[in-house]
Amino acid sequence: NAGVTQTPKFQVLKTGQSMTLQCAQDMNHEYMSWYRQDPGMGLRLIHYSVGAGITDQGEVPNGYNVSRSTTEDFPLRLLSAAPSQTSVYFCASTNGGTGAEQYFGPGTRLTVT
Amino acid sequence: KQEVTQIPAALSVPEGENLVLNCSFTDSAIYNLQWFRQDPGKGLTSLLLIQSSQREQTSGRLNASLDKSSGRSTLYIAASQPGDSATYLCAVDSGGSNYKLTFGKGTLLTVNP
Image (cartoon, rainbow over all chains, first blue to last red; front, side, top):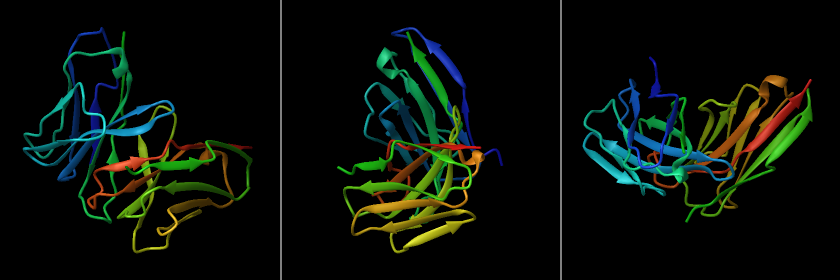
């Protein structure tokens, strides 16, 4: 099992550009989530999905879109990048349930200039 | 709104010392609490998950305890080693399926040879 994979590892964007961060898992997990990690802020939930075709907003959803057409994939789209979106983005997945651990990908480090 | 606090923010100890990391949360209505380890520039690795009905979990030199009523958890590391140097993150699940975690800001641990 590759677990949770994310691409790209690093990305530099100019303000106003759009891009998609890719996330895939091969564990057949129903639940997937996107977090951003900023210095001094910890990890914050952006969007999550409880199954194919079902997504919802987390704590900091503005400026991001998600969709979940398959169980395996959960891409995060930045519609018009802003310097405030400079961050490290982590994708995670879990089977769900109170005893199920959440597994994280290696992260994408995004810089918006 | 759930808030998670970790104290101390940073800790430096000599090799071989036993140490305790602290985590507190404001809303005791949690389903579980998870401790993660994060190495610089890497993703998160799950260390221990304690369900709300449990008091503690152990894995090797690590022991995590949970006192839900007082909103506290501790991670005890026995006989610390330089390889334990990392950031340790505490996260709580208030939703029940472990895909919407609230994280603390972490404790940066340095174990000196």
